[in-house]
Amino acid sequence: MGGAGVQALLITAVNQRDLELSAGRRLHIYDTGADIAGAGLAIFWHHGTPNLGEPPEPLLPAAAQRGIRWVSYDRPGYGGSTAHPGRDVAAAPGRRTHLRPQLR
Image 1 (cartoon, rainbow, N blue to C red):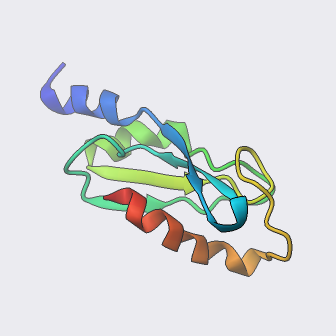
Image 2 (image 1 turned 135 degrees about the vertical axis):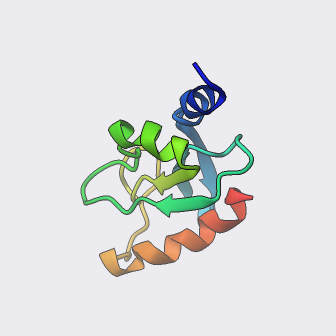
């Protein structure tokens, strides 16, 4: 297997971790490129609801070969993320601001 194939296998691992937010809340995030330098493009996976944020694994090898990083999160109140009373679906894009510092 060539270098690109080995790198693709490494990047298809989905790293999961919890991001501590204000008021004791937690956002559970998924990131295929957290430990890999050089991932040029990041895709924020905004999945349907109700659902967890785990990226679509069948797409990960092709994305890795192209240097694409998948990032997502469990919606508040689902999976490993704590509930956020009063939130609505329109608040979802704003949660990317919590993820941005974690992507470096």
